[in-house]
Image 1 (cartoon, helix red, strand yellow):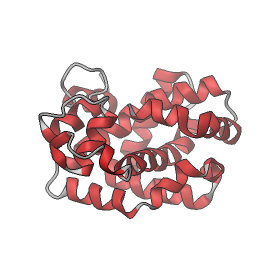
Image 2: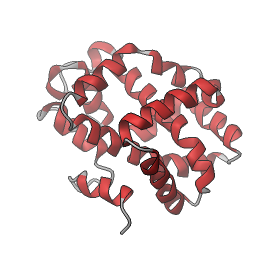
Image 3: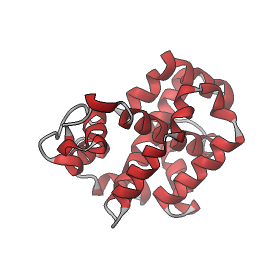
Image 4: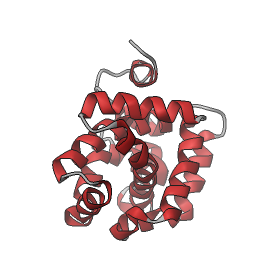
Length: 195
């Protein structure tokens, strides 16, 4: 899935760059990603369920410029990466308050400090888009799954190949259902609302 792709990107170089950049060890980066990536996935899901959201996501992924965040791990600390990541967060979460809440919840879950996670969040958002973009441009290997569209294919592939029959929405669902119980609604609420 998405988290594994990020952890293994460039033979682990991405994780090492993030560790150096955010003053964490690699295990800490892994824990932070484990808490942040599902929240970002829930944000993508919320976004594509809105009218025109799937087309907007497909267009953003097709532009291809997000791939550089995966291909060039040294960009982790670059100001344009952070700026792009903040723009992505604006689309996914709609407000800085939600981003702050996501960071606070991820801190509880991962044991990594909230301030560090706030700084990591835009970078991780850019990396998530980069990973999805790379998968989409993977070409024909992904076509035919997930309803035949390249985006359906990438979402199906990110979900571990599940949901190929049900098209893009079921692939998205399985990719973004953080706890595997078949419901994203509770995952989003669990991440964004106090229990």
